[in-house]
Image (cartoon, rainbow, N blue to C red):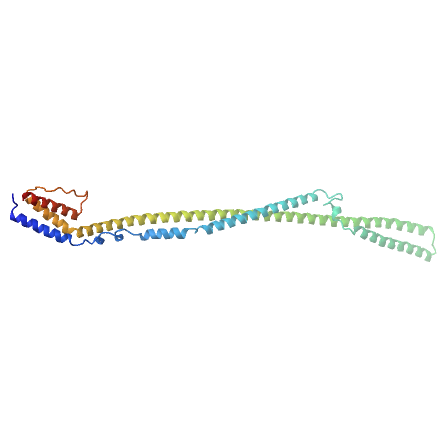
Length: 319
């Protein structure tokens, strides 16, 4: 059984077109290559840059914190020394407690001038010289008046010696009382100085303790800033990376669509030939020739080739 002439002519025309089309090389570069792979998104580049720049960026805060800790430790060491000295100062105040009697450290005797006895002795010697001069004057007066060796001279001399004895005792007592008062005043002044020194050193210890606490607080702040910077940097990098990946995905989808369009355009002649050949086969009654197994997702070229084989089978059968 022969095919109608118009189908034979159509089959020949199909064969000519297929032969001519397959002779033309397909430029696969139109739909393959790296141009269809989405590159690194600017946000991803920025995230990588932040990560690179952020390496070690928090180190200055850690260094400042370490310096603050070191300074605080030194201040605490000095505070311990100050407190030790304050303890000695307070212990030194103990010697001033009480009346100051005795001869030990902190007693009034400890503050008495070492020259006090010399001053007293010299003052008494001068007093004795003055008393001897007074006795001589009484004797001279008695001699002048012709009463030398008389009872009146004896009375006057006795009264004079009694009075000057009281005066000598009073002078010594006055000198010793003055020395005692001076020693007591110096003792009170030393007590005040020791007390003030203890207060000053105690205040200094408190100031240094406060400074050590400030250094500890500063160290904590520096550590906090370091952690805050690291967390913020990590968050920025993560956000930029996610946004960059999202935009990269969109770009890749667009490139995939462009690649598919380029591939479709490259194989468009074979698509037309496939439809042409399918029409011929349908007109011939759908009688199949040799079976051709196409790929799971056939390209227009393989589809057109399968159609050509089917047409060839029809021609062979009807002959």
